[in-house]
Length: 67
Image (cartoon, rainbow, N blue to C red; front, side, top):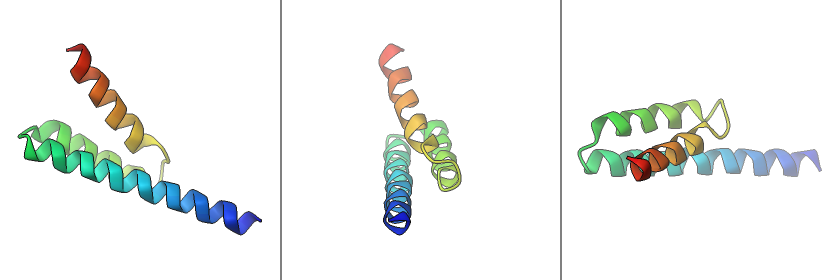
């Protein structure tokens, strides 16, 4: 049973990294180098700290809406 939980955890971590990378690419394509770089760093960190990439993406979106 532990193996299944580990597999799911690893899959969710990989999905978080990929979605954060996609957000970073979108930011670079819009010309937002700073936020693209921030998301790229968050994607790299999210392999070690689960959820940081998702948190960075959500915070960036919230910041843009409130700005």
